[in-house]
Length: 106
Image (tube, rainbow, N blue to C red; front, side, top):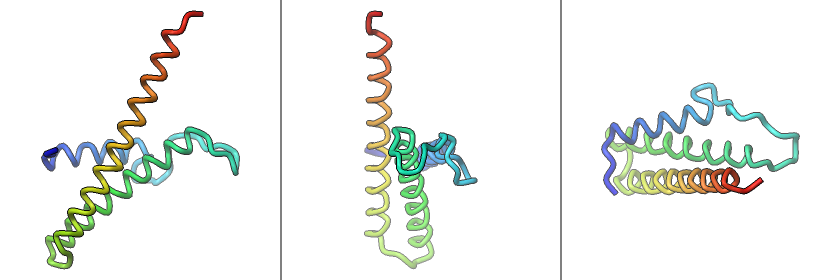
């Protein structure tokens, strides 16, 4: 899978925006303490994607500065790709479930 840098930057920006942007606070309201709600799980997944993207950016910067090895960058790219693919899969399944609910007879 080949992704150009502009597309990757746009996807990362979108994921960061969904996770709450630069403020670090999620847009989704939190549940009572101790409750694992679906919104908390989604918020955590978005946070993981954002963290992976930031790690990728740091690894790329370190590689350019000569402080890191190419293996570190490849590992960061793989982790970010996996996190993003997982998030997309969850999104697709949520949309599918929503459409199934809409198609149920009343």
